[in-house]
Image 1 (tube, rainbow, N blue to C red):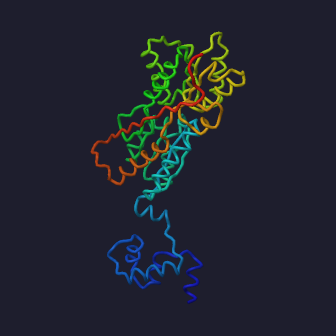
Image 2: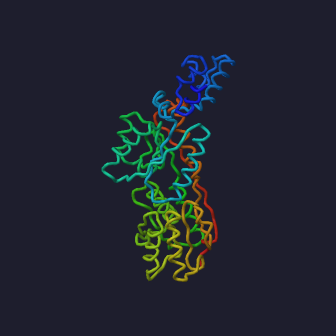
Image 3: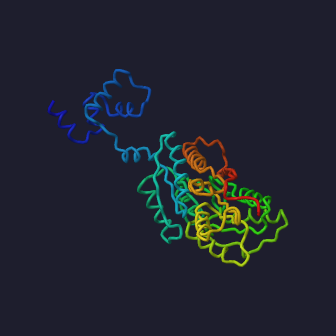
Amino acid sequence: MANNVEQTMTTATIVDVANHAGVSKKTVSRVLNSEPNVRPATREKVLKSIEALNFKRNPLGLALARKRSHLLALVYDNPSPNFLMHLQTGIMDACRSRGMGLYLHNCRYKSPNLVDDIEHMIANTMVDGLILSSPVCDQQALIDMLKRRKVNYVSINPKDAEHGLTVNVNNRRTAFDITDYLINLGHKHIAFVKGHPDLASSGLRELGYRDALLKHHIDVDETLLVQGMNNFVSGRSAAKKLLDRKRKPTAIFAGNDDMAAGVLYEIQSRQIAIPGEISLVGFDDTPFSQHVWPRLTTASQPFGEIGRTAASLLIDRFNHRDKDDETSKKILMECQLIIRESSGAIQ
């Protein structure tokens, strides 16, 4: 009895459980792995020993033995916290349903140590695969390292979607629809606040804006395109440039909702009526878009579905459930235009 008490005071091992139950170490392992070839009476005896000794499996030891950690890593460097929050929620949904965990790894995509940083993280965590958010997924040296080490990964909104697993949003088409909507309201003098230049989505949204102007035979006024950086501060700065013009735009299309928030702040600080004098639209449908007045017209990105799909693609790939023999698989997701009070017909 004293022996048992002493064992419970220390960390019990699989050998302790085997000795306590009077079975082999292999039998304990079979019970722990829920294998079918164990007699019910033996299984019950082992389970009672596990409970008596308060035995806990060592996750690191299990990972080493199986060469699997049951962890995915989300690797990101993105200026929009709203995007990351909702993406992470979708990834976690998929992980929970598939018995996986999620490790978050923030990095600096322009760092000369990026590859070493992520290679070190992989070695320390033994993650089963990486979810790479743009612009991290566009760093070729990183992709080369992952291929060399045969690490599974999926990219979200990469610039090059022709190789590997990718989940993309139809940014160009959605930006076209937004601009087309404004033109149909009578707007022809439409400004565009461009997103972060290193994000593939930014360039595609600008192309969609230009496509719509071209469709309606409206010349592109390059002075109406102002660079932003996908955050509030850059949105406000862009709005100042646009509103200081002698001829102000009748509508402003901000490349994401974070920049639209800055534009809205600047417009209202000047007591300019929205949408009476200027219509404003964003992109993403973040919570902010519904928590201001006027509520923001925007495009709803399926953030949660993007995360769930990316994680599921990755899990299927390393579980060999992906029946596609191709090394590439591209998923394209559509957005929905959400019309609210910040936009209206030209006065």
